[in-house]
Amino acid sequence: MSVVRLSIFFSFILVLVYFTRNTFGLKRGGKPSVSEISKRSGSTTALYYVDVTTADDEWGTGTDADVLIQIFGVKGNTSAVELTKSGNLFESGNTDRFILLEKAVGSLTKIGIRRNEKGLFDSWKLALVTVQPAGSLVYKFAFNEWILPNEWVYSYGGHMHRKAL
Ligand SMILES: [Ca+2]
Ligand SMILES: [Ca+2]
Image 1: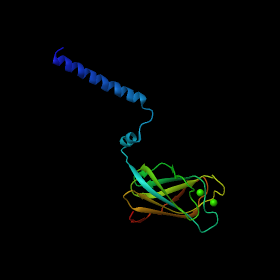
Image 2: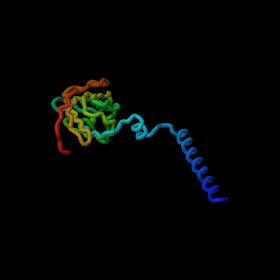
Image 3: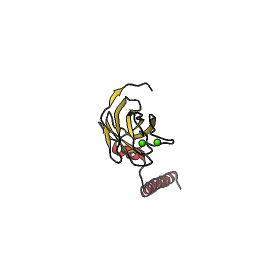
Image 4: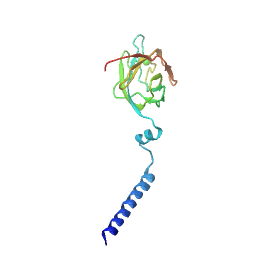
């Protein structure tokens, strides 16, 4: 075999490998990865520091229910995500911090909070939620109300506070 023939042969093999991989990649692709989705929709993700303060001014303010949050901004909204981690969350007077990696929504406009009826005495009085997108302002959402089960409660507060982390 001449050098030219040999290089053509190897080029052919390379092209074959390339197409085979692509074909298998497509066949295999059940769920696209997060980065693939981000690229496709042109959106980016952001880190959110969420601090949830349960009221302590009445009896039974704490809860063991599951709590969801949804963050709204000028560029859209995150999905509804559960605020969860280990430990006894949402107890009277406590502030629980959660770190979420969600869609970047720009300047925040409002948040939604929702709980279910899990646990004994699931009633929950929520004082306040602050949300800080990483590297951004802290947005303060006042509630100071009993959160009824299985319905979204929104706060448009959003008083901005600069806060050194
Ligand atoms: Ca609890
Ligand atoms: Ca309670």
